[in-house]
Amino acid sequence: MLRCHLVLGIFFVLDRGCGDRRRCPNISETICVRSRASDSAYVLHQVDILWMRESMANILVTGAARGIGRSVVERALARGDTVYAMVRKTTDIHNFPPVKELHVVQMNVANTDSVAEGFDEVDRLLNGAKLNGIVHCAAISMPGAIELTADSEFESILNTNAMGSLRILRAAIPRLRGHNGRLVLVTSLWGQASGPLLGAYCASKHAIESMADTARRETAGMNLHIVVAEPGVVLTDMLTSQAPAVQHYLDAMSAKERSLYGALYKRYFRVVSSAAGITAERCAAHIDRALFSRRPPTRYRIGNDSKIVCLLNWLLPDRWMDRMMALSLNNKPLPADLS
Image (cartoon, rainbow, N blue to C red; front, side, top):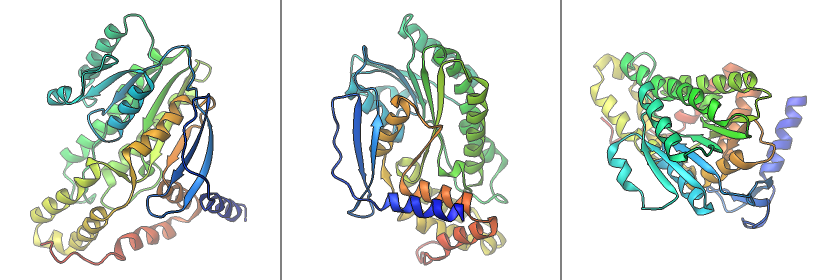
């Protein structure tokens, strides 16, 4: 009964209307987020964000070359913060405008030495100043059934996403503690739920959620915050790369593999090809709340899909969630153009 009441309450909040989004030049910012899928507005947030600060913040962002990370960088620069944008490829270093407050540093979160060197370079650039916040966005995703995914692909996702987050945690904690520093780990709704063809990605995001909880409890009383951001579908390169990857895996399947999993891959192709979601900029606006809210919750669920899926995953028995996930794919007609 209690869970039913909670569900009704949450859907009531999601259905509430409100005015347009506006930003106030005060400590409090009023944010109204509009649904991309409909014209109605939902949930009015009164957010205590420290926009008025004695000095601008020093913010480090991983995965800064594109997607959510790039939007976080752009918003931080617009606020006047000094930003340390961490990118994996040398070519990405030159894809940023020349801005005095922006420092682009090459760092691969999948490599321990690279992470150490990247943070050492940031320390040098800080010249004795402190990092106020770190936003860890770097991640990769490749679709694939558990039975068919090669060990090397599974390990690559776990190394970049899960072990990469561990490397960031170890580097971030000593640099943020003692002065109310903030680490925001960007996971996904798939850190709470699990979906077909996302086994490696879900496993990595579940691992990040667990590490965040553990680290938060281990560092209690050290004057820093570790916060998890759980976006739903975000319109980024990671999403648009899924459909070509599915086609590649379909082409490589044997006849037996195609008979077992072909229909599932084709339906997944249809889902990711037509998926609706929020923009990276809107996601970054919520991450700002995680960075600067006076009393941040341990988790920010970003987007209606994240709120609803995480709620249902907590509320429903496993078999019911199995059916929900099956319906989310089976109600999509099979694409005729896929081999």
